Length: 144
Image (cartoon, rainbow, N blue to C red; front, side, top):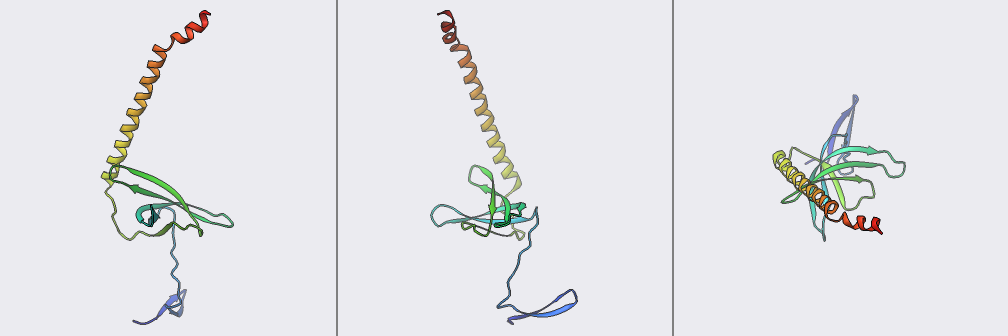
């Protein structure tokens, strides 16, 4: 295999020595990416994500990425800023990998919604119970 490659840019042919060449990835908002995130200990997990924005800060420009953190029984969306100083997270382009099924993720979100709605109903019932059964405490204060 040759260490040299000929490329043409705007009509100019150049010979590139691949041993010293650097690959530059180009990202746009909406691009699908993989996000490698450090977990507990020295373990890493790869997650599917989407570039959601760029922050053009003077000292530390950042790529904003929202990734899907899927566990056995739940799915969460996590948004992170990746800068030149980010040490426990990496980014690479997504190459036609299907890491999850849309329906599976939607089912997990629907379960989470149902659980939160049930929790909301419990709090509303507790409030109503409080208002009904504890009202006499304030009535006693008024009588004094």
